[in-house]
Every structure is written in C-alpha cells, then in structure tokens.
Length: 194
Length: 369
Image (cartoon, rainbow over all chains, first blue to last red; front, side):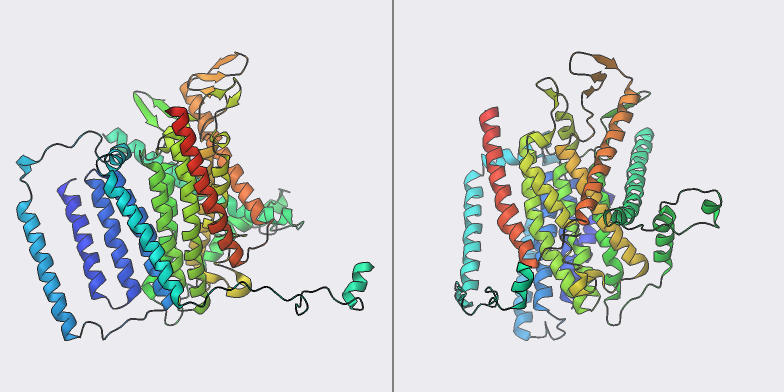
C-alpha cells in the first residue's frame, strides 16, 4: 500500500476513534465507530487481506454496528453530559489507557525490520487460502469459537426469558369469542343466504 | 497504463449512466404501469409549448414523469424540521443511495471485447470476491434509512427507521444464505466467473443457467431482495396508513427524491443479482465467443464486436424484465402485517435457506469428490 494512502486511512481511523470518545450523542459515537471499523476493513484490503477486509465490513459495519444503532433507538438513549466526571471512573480509565499504551509500545518495539519481512505467498488473502488455514491449521480453535458463540446466544436468551412472564398458550373459549358464528337472526346471516 | 485508466473511466461512466437512466425509466413505468394495471389512464397531460399536441404525437406521460416530476421535486423547498439533527438529516439520503450505486461496479455486463490490442473485460470492476462485496454494500445500506428516521426528530419517522432496520437485517440473513448456496454451487465468488460457468448447454439444447441448479435460492433471493428494497408488499417502514410516510416523513424536495431513487436503484440491483446468479448474466442461449452454436449442429460465426453487443443487450434486457416483474408484484399484492413479515423472514426463508445450503453443499461434495 502506498504510504500516502496509508497515512490518509490511518488519519481517518484516528479521527473516527477520537469521535467515538469525545462526542456526547450516542448515535454520533456509533457512527464514528462504524467509520473506524470500515476504515480498518479498507486498510486490511490495502495490505492484501482482501477477504478479511470485506468480512470485517460485512460483520462489523453491516451487522454489529447496525445492531448497536438499533438498540440505541429502541432504548432511546439520550446524550449524557454528566458522564466521565466520576473520579473513580477516571482513575480506572487512566490505568487501562496506560496499560494499553505500554502494550502498543511493546508491539512497536518487537515489530520486525523491513529487511526481515518475507514476501507473501501468491494466494495470500484469497478466500481459498483463508479457508485452508481456517479449516486445517486452526480447525479446533475455529470450532471451539463457534460453540462458544452458540453458548453465548443460548445464555442471552435464557437471561432475557428469566424475567419475562412464562409464555402461555391461550386457547380461546369458543363461547366467548367475538369471532364465533353469529346467531341465525343476525343481519349477516341473511346477507349470506341471499 | 493511460489506456487502462481511460477504459476503466468509460466503464464506470457507462454503468452509472445506465443505472440512472433505467431508474428514470422505472419511474415512468411505475406510474404508467400502475395505471395500466388499475385500469386508469395515468399521467398524460404535460407537454412542452403544445408541440406534442400540434403535431399529433402520442403522449405516454414521459414528460410528466421523467421531466416535470423531477424538476418539481428538486425545486421544492428543502425543509428541515425543528429539533432535527441537521447534519445527519442531510447526510442520510446519500448514505442510503451511495452503497446501492457502488454495488453496480461488479455487475457483469458482458464477456470480453477486443479493441485493437486491448482485451476489455466488460465488468466495471473485476473483483474476485464479488459476492462478498455485494453482501458488504447491501449491509451498509441500512444506515441511511435508519438514520433518516432518527435524525428527523419525529415519532413516525423514528418508528419507520426502526422497522426498516429490523426488516433489512432480518432479510439480509436469508439473502446471504441464498447467495452462499449459489457460491457453493459455482465454486467461486467472482460474478464474472459465475456468468462464464453458465455458458454451454445441457442435453444439447438446455442453457446451463443457474435457475435449474438453484431454484430454491432464486425464490429466496427474489423475496428477500424485494424486502430489502422496502416496497409493497414489504413497505412496512413507509406504512402510510399508520406512519404518514415512515422514515422519510420529514423529507421533502431533492432529499426525498434521493430516497425514492434509492428504492428504484435497489429494485434494479435485485434484478442484476438475480440475472447474474440464476439467468446466465450476459449469456445468450447457444451463443459462444465465436458465434451461435444452435442445437442440431448449425453454426453461425460472428465477429467479437457483435457477440459483445449481443451479450450487453441480453444482460440489460433480462434485468429490465425482472424490474418489470417486481413492479408488477408491487401493484398486485397488499402489504404484509408486521408479524407476518417477521414470520416469513425468520421461520420461512431462513430455515429454507439453511436446508438449501446444506443440501447444495452435500450434493457438491458428493458429485465433485
């Protein structure tokens, strides 16, 4: 990827990331996050991982962020100007940020030199190459992850249903039903027979 | 290098012009066709300085729908309601239209065209993960609608936006399952390759079109695609009898026109996808790269330019046929109730798509292994 394009995409990602944490309106925050995730997808494509890039956009931008937006709409979450003033929250946030920065520093230091980088295989980033490594080298991890996700879905449903009233099958009483056949002297019956 | 850039630019221009032109054509057929179906006369009055009348030209309402209506739309007051999120209110229509328009970049309009020493692939952008690209852009399309409803600061618009996002996410799953089954069947994600593998014949006369391999996927994609385009019978997000106009209640003028255009462009997109996956794309029955090979052994040789022209025209004719079919459905069926919509999506199309996918994968493995 040319350095100019990378710089542009990286700057866009940073602007989006700042947008996520600096705005007070939750909808604007979600949109900024969607921008970041889309931008990351484009960076993946630029680095040769085309399939991963598109999957990133399909899954995160197309599904998960839309779900975030949907939940914000449903719960009608409003902008909260008082958030972030809590001292304990600030303390924990600073510690987490410092730990994150230290981790990034370690990663940057350990990054191999350009001379040490091997050239990519020809089929790098294609669907076939991705599928081959996913279903051979990482098969166990892949299957365990899918079972984990299934367990999470079942757990979410179980938690949601625990507080909801039990679903009862209501069988309508035919004698009280408004849809029951009208008595023969009703005007409808005459019209039908006519 | 320069030649490639020029070719790419021309291809991009051709596809954009065709999409916008066909969208306008559909606007006309939507109104005149509706009149035809409902036994009315329909738009037939507008004329320019009485020229048409003086020379006795037949008036098909083209000036009404293609010229007068858009001019009226774009010169109307662009109203932004009080308390609206002005930035998102302005952005939403374009956020809805843009993903639909860029999806056409992978529409295969023909096989190859030889111009001098250049071999031009008649697909505007040859992506080898075309099907994934389609799924990605369709997924992004939800934002414009949902945000348009939210940014208007109006309860009806908000409800429309929520309905739209729930409906589009639900039917996207069925649509993805149908597309995945097609991908498994052809063994490629490249739309151009899919079209190429639909060439040739079975039993000496039957074109190898995907509809014969994946009829269930075709039905799912057609229904889910119509739900994605949010038109009758799936127009719950608009639902004018209960929600005024749903997510674009607070839109007027050019921005509302953009929302309408999005709907028509989506109809066109669904047609392009159906034709590409199931009706051979640009394939003309019995036409190969060197001319016609009729069943019975007759061979009619044709130059490359004529073959390319045949393919190009065949692709767009098929697309227009499916657009007309969708408009016909739109004026035939009444609107679903919301629970019916969700039941059809989650309990009908999704399980059907899963079964179809499993059966397809099984057959492909058994036949190919």
